[in-house]
Amino acid sequence: MIMKLIKEVCEPCSRPINIGQPLLECEACRTAIHTKCFKVAGFCPTNGLWVCKVCSLNVIPRYNPFSGMISDGGDKFYDDEGGCDDETIQKISNVLDQCQSYSTADLNRVVKELQNSCNLSSTHSKFTSYFVNLDGNKTNFDCLNVELKRIELNFSVIGIAETNTDEPLKELYRIPQYNSFYQVTQENKLKGTGVALYVANHLNAEVIENLGYCTPDIESIFVKITQSSSKLTLISGVIYRPPNGDIHNFLKSFDHICKLLPKSGVRIMGDFNVDLLKVNGDAGHGNYTLFEECLFRNGFAPVISIPTHERPNCKPSCIDNILTNDPGNCVLSGCITDRIGDHAPTFEFTDIEFEVGPKKKKVPTATLR
Image (cartoon, rainbow, N blue to C red; front, side, top):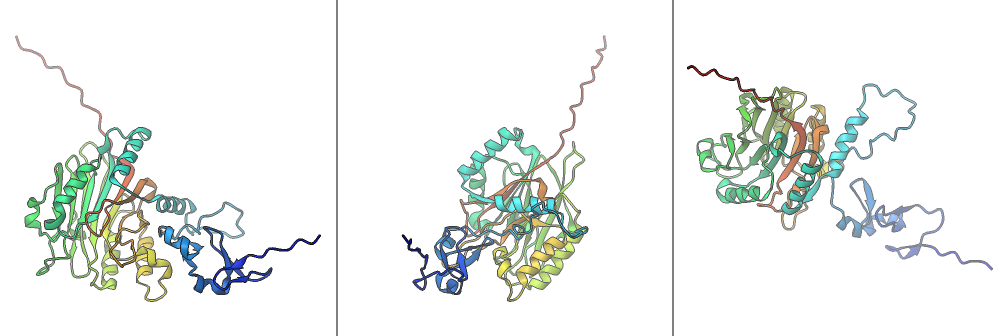
């Protein structure tokens, strides 16, 4: 008895896929089509995988240029001395793959789990960062205070972009138990300007003047963070790139800032208005790739890999981020779905801890009789 061979049918053209014909398979649901039919079928590369149109709608786009670069540990026939550090690439790739969106309730549950598993009972000893483009203190600052109160963690540093608030007015916008640092806003500009940092008051912070910018192309503020009982020094900053500014002037200033920073212990929070999700398809003008190259050239990597900005009738984009030059210290990163505006707040938890000095013993005093 001769069995009839059942051939798979290519859905776009309704013709069978014969043995030996070039085919393309969705790497999510395994649907197969003729390679020549991929445009009609809506197949597209997403997160480094070829997926069909249906699956592409269910996949959250993710930035991770390192996913295909991880060494499999096999024997190499060449000497890669001076090339990329596989261990460093692996760490960065893991951070980007594990970045997720959390509701406030989910984030609080994760915080408790970390406290239990990583001995985080004294939460403010571990260094944490939170960033959001607020789109105006006057409109949204009260909402920010409410959302921060809902999170069962006091972040070490809070960064804000588009404050629309000049430095003399900063006392109008207080976050309890934080000290504030504001950059001047662009002259004669009432909206789309201003960056600020809030540092927890158990930490010492000093503004680094030569890293501060306020131009039509870049706005920035940086502080050096220390603690009296520790030798550790960290640097946190906020950068905002106005979308109508010159990208090349921005990259020149950003590159200059990076070169002045130490080789580790730095976090740069910001709304860079450069969509990292477009890096892979950036054959047109190269701006996204230029930004990525500038990051890597200066030893920085992003810890946020998923969409952070969303508007009706617009594709989600990853324009807000937290950049670091020691990604190996990142324990958790992500976005918070309870948005204040169009931008999702981003955060990073690290295992960096300010050493708490030994308590001074009380010296007994003599009592005069």
